[in-house]
Image 1 (cartoon, rainbow, N blue to C red):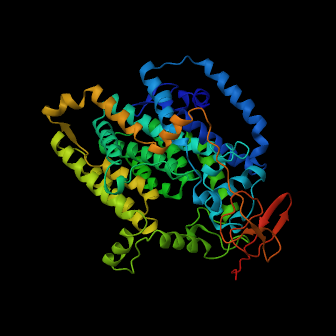
Image 2: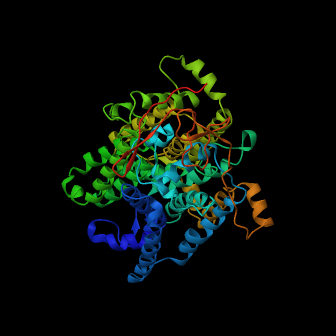
Image 3: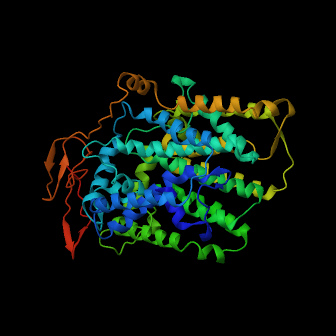
Length: 534
């Protein structure tokens, strides 16, 4: 489907041609995620007027049409690369689907949010039913199309698609790209992923990891990282292209739609546009991007009352379905849950509390060890090269500090920390040449293939391999539990007994509160009338 979309858009629109290289990688590795981006935004648009389950029959017709459309262009591939990226990598990663289970947050709000999207057209004030619905990531819209009756296993396969993109991106950079920064930053990432399997309590150093079913953090980390590293490379080389900028705009929008933290790509995009010097021609080619962005903002306002929840300054107090300060309550709750740094704390006191929280000591002690080992590796293998882009480097390091500081002051946990750790490893070196002693060794493809294979094989957990070998042809069956529901005091809806997870029930509230649906024409509106449960 993704390839067909590129065929339709065509390179005359200023986008990459089908099966051609872009940023040193073959564009076909983006096809699966490109199709998810298209499906997600299509679901957003349709949901303004219809529930997404209404498009299922048309979805299959559209899919068949797009598959047939592929025959319009002959496939141009390198067979070895195609087999590795389209069969070997996803096959190994798919082992992770064995013995996988649902994330806590899947029951808290993800699954019910998807149920609302699939069964109802857009709801005004849906965030009042459950505050966490206010985020309404595009991942929810994509996921709403991948329920297989009551088996939720295909929601995990969405994460496999994004992880496959990540490894395929790294593969092409290391194996084929002549761009030294992208090549060797990707080599550092491969080594970092291998080190992830060793250390305190068995390892875990901040590298990407498969979450249990229902979370979009891995998908976001992959899209954010690819956008980040490509923008950094262009800025570092002082090399800017209007056609490449268009693709960067689209994947950056996807990052923002996945998670609000994606807005931290905006400074890099602004710097890119500034250095490019002209935006008029680019703007003409981004009308679709503008339309998708506006529809996304409209969706956010309808659901949460904010342009982007939980940034309170983007919220509209005048809207009847938004209650003043709710965004601040949400952001403060997240910060408290993950022990974010606040300016009224002594840094020593904060750090002592943060490092003991959850798995922070294990993960970030291992990260520091991995970082130091890779730093020493880079000192041995590479030599500094005089840079001609000192100002760009200053901007990049300033941006890196901004990214790190923003993470510390919002939600400094392992899920959000993946992008910070990947960025730090990638920025170990900007300008360098290989030392002659190691030059031949590093460019031996058998060594790179071996490291790449080890990295992928170590990604699924050992228990997943065990289950795979015991039942290789058994599709995992993952179902949501059914809790005991109690009627709310307010009269509409139910809430789970002794829990805040609704799992899969459309009229379930995360707590006992008073809230009533109102009918506005053919739409439903929920106003905020929350009271504390006894």
